[in-house]
Length: 298
Length: 298
Image (cartoon, rainbow over all chains, first blue to last red; front, side, top):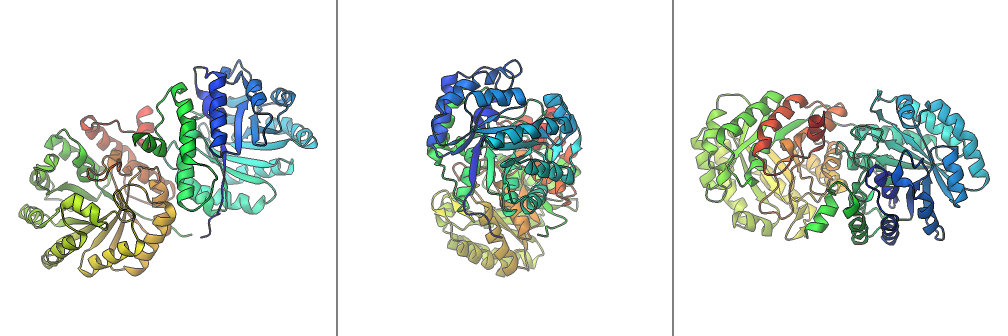
């Protein structure tokens, strides 16, 4: 078994992590959090989301966040759920945009009130336009394994959607176990196939730790050749539209495991802990990830 | 990658889990807990420990616990730290006894005030006597990967100690990551070697979830051919002599993952949750394992 020697962490805390927080986190705290994440060695990050401020008021400062981060060379990704969001993102000068679709129709409808097919048909011309202007496009594939409403998702459906996205020209696929229900054998199976069938895109695994299997799933994905992982500092987040989906896998726990296996991430854990310290007082629940708790207990 | 199709869960909650609880758990609660664990499908269990009641008052009712469980056909294991403990265990009619040694000298000294070598020399004739009377002997190997005082333990030292135990005639080796620090690659490496070199003994993996890697380590151990796992209902436990070693991996999370991968454990999760419900009010901390929390949130 040969594991990758390096891995890329895509930090999603500032977007996926914070979007569930009911109390508005002041913009300067968000920016300090993002700045310290970058100082810790994070090079790719979901900064914010151009969703409707009516639906997700937490993200109403998206343009301000992007502005502060516009002059560096990091991959500063913003999420945009539709054409309007993409236009707002482009107006602020975004160079990397994430779009998303759920493999599950029911999930996609609950999330953005469109079928998966309707979403794809809306997104394809948008992706073409973005690629024509050299914007980095990341496609987030929700409910790639299980759906809170439909149960198990057929592997071939996920693969088909991933292929369709790849053909439409996206740079990256973030394949998500949205409700933290995949088992390691499922992680290995899907990612092995995607790795073989889609050599032209960056493949990223996105796991939630709802059932404590996230690190096992990441280990299985590494065995399938995956070397990019979405993680959230402090394990912040979940999904507002996916019942029981609390908790992205924590950046610090993933970095710790990867580094302990000799897989370089370029992230310094002590500096990462400082980033969590910045955001922790603004978070409604206690941060109880393994590494952070141990670091604070010292 | 061929994983085992069945796995055996050795429940250690009543012993390893409860020994750290400062408030005495009434004997009848312990017995109800054990009874319900058996009802859920557990067939091998560490029931209690014949340690000095002065050192671990929680285990002062060891003889009573054994008595209640003496008439069934389950593998009812009791821990005995020394000759005196073994004698007390035999007096109550125990048919399965666990002894323990730390690979790390420092750990062993802190734990039972003997060097690893002194422990081995004391245990060898005891093991021979136990085997002569057909008692099942389980050897628990602490600090098989890391020691809180000595840091990394050389793999060859752990293997050498396991071999010595195997040669002394034990039936089972429970190889423990006492402080929850092993990475999956280390789990795979050690267990692959043990599996090849010691085909004559039952090999059991014992992981703690201190750094959230327990399920990943179990998955890696499965890949190495291991099909026996020590787990603790509700994730109870830790080690009083190992700083920061809170939390055995939770039985319910392991069973969930194994069953989800098609690996039969014979354990019914709904019944297991009832066992945790029995013990939860007596436990000083909140039970926050993945499966139990989700089951209770329903």
